[in-house]
Length: 221
Image 1 (cartoon, rainbow, N blue to C red):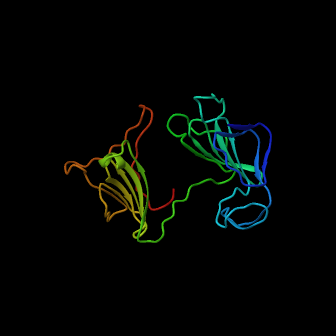
Image 2 (cartoon, rainbow, N blue to C red):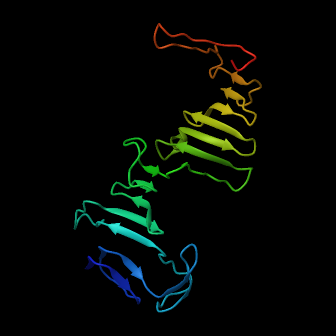
Image 3 (cartoon, rainbow, N blue to C red):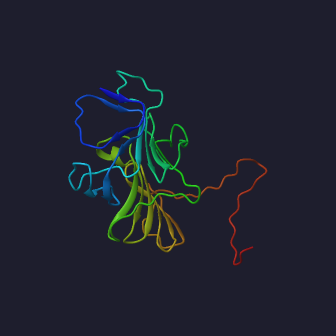
C-alpha cells in the first residue's frame, strides 16, 4: 500500500496495485479546459482521454474505510466547491448538505440540508402529465414499499396524502377544497366515512377551562 500524510501531486499517469491512502490533498496538475460537470475537453501534461472525469475542486477522505486494518475515529468523505465544504458523508453513512451538524437524531438524521436563508428541496418532473411523490416504506416487497405517501398530481394540481398501503386519506384540490375520504370534494371541506358508516367530527379541549367553538361569520372579526 502507498500512504502519504502530506500533499500528493499527480503529474502523470500511474497504476497502483495495492491500497492507496492520501492523508493530505490529492491534486492533478496541467489539466486544461474542464467543463461544468468535470469532463476533460482538452488537456496538457496528462495522458488522458477526452471524456475522462476529473475533480475541478476538492474531495477529501478522512480516515480509512478498511476497518479490518485500521479503526479510524473520523471516517468521512467531504466535497468542496469554491473553497467551502458543500457535502459530507459521515462515518455512519448520513448525508449532510451545507452543514456538518446532523438533524434530529434517531428519526430524521439520514439526510440534513442547510442554508443560511430559506431552505428547501425541489422534486421536479419532466411534464404536467407526471406526478411527484415521497413514499414511506418499511420493507422491500409488495405494499411494504408504499405504506405511506405524499403525492402531487401535476395534471390536476392535487396534493394527496396516503396511509396504510397507498390508500388516499386526504386531498387538497387545485381550488383549495379539502376532501377527507373523498377524492372529489364538492364543498370547501368534504368528509366521507372511510368505512361507510357514521361520519363524525370531534372537537376536544385538553382541560376544563378551555372551550371548543364552531364560528359562522361574514367578516374577518
